[in-house]
Image (cartoon, rainbow over all chains, first blue to last red; front, side, top):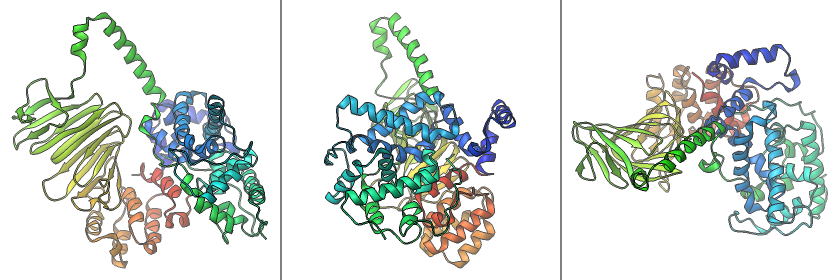
Length: 208
Length: 340
């Protein structure tokens, strides 16, 4: 039995009727229609299913962490990632489109990151390109890695986030697109253009 | 359950300069800077991919907790200090004798008794007991068992199972209840299960609801852990720790047990042939674990067996699975966990 079949089996009769009615009414246009699996996980999360939240965390936490890393000091990003999901659990009712859960979480992370900066009065990344500090609570990284993070921190926000997802969190371009809701084209541009700027920041020649 | 990303447009062949394909999806010739950045910056990534237990409770739990707290506040306001004093939780869990004469801390268990933290609850061949696990569930302790509370706090309740058999029914968020044995740590993920650990020989976990995460004790150097969902069992070896989860009665049960014993590096053509002939519906979770245990050159054959049993969603990349890409494995877990 596939996940879709299992998810359908687990739905209440009312849920199944509702889903069928939505599809028949064309509420979800084909190009943005969530798969049965996506909808099942988010619907379960809406019901408070902890396993579903665990699944969402496993899928989106790294993306959220990268969004935060683009804004807040490194030693704060992990705790704030947990806070994003804690808030998401309480606010899941405000998510309008289940298929956009990744974009919704990314937006929540950006808001929380900005709030955190205002509260703690830390200078935002990318402003003065402040030095990376090896603070307590953050895993120590080498000097070259610190310089690379500082350089990424001086890039425009869109490129910063995408490069952090790619190099810090290890997500590929397709994975970044899937998690953020961006198109493949947008992610590709962010990666390529961001990489060009990063080479320039690092004082390196462009790739052939 | 897991997220299945929607398919994207194909990359035009030959698009971009050298290294752009690598930057995009790690295909083609590696871009030197990209590869170096990946290696240098990975340690700065998020540690852990499991939802922390203190992340909070989903909306439904919060609503229930609010109602309970409101009622509790009203009750406390209405009673005297002496009654309130008596309502304080005992330093242990409630224990009842179900049959015979179990002992707690060396003394016979009385009606309304308490199993104190650190005290051993022991049942002989003719006795059994029932323990209330804080306020999150129940533990049935079978004859011939020895257990004690290791710790009991808001965010963590843990038991030591020295030997014997327990049946746990836990109705709490995952990662709140743990059972330590000499050879494995069982982490409850919201479920019901039986865990048997004889004095010598192999233990056995049987899950009847939800799922349990089995890990070797920290620092043991034992092999891989196991995720054991409803309907499956898992042996626990006193030396090597958790085995490979299996469906009792499956045609590959014996093969899996033998390879757990001999070591999965021994997998050859004969074993793969037996896997191909014997695996069927209900073996998906077993095969998910087998994929991560066999030598790299055997992974393709295991994927073939899985594909014959279950309709794998399109975005799953065979090459990623053969590399044991963490993301691909999690997506596959989302499929197999619900299969059968």
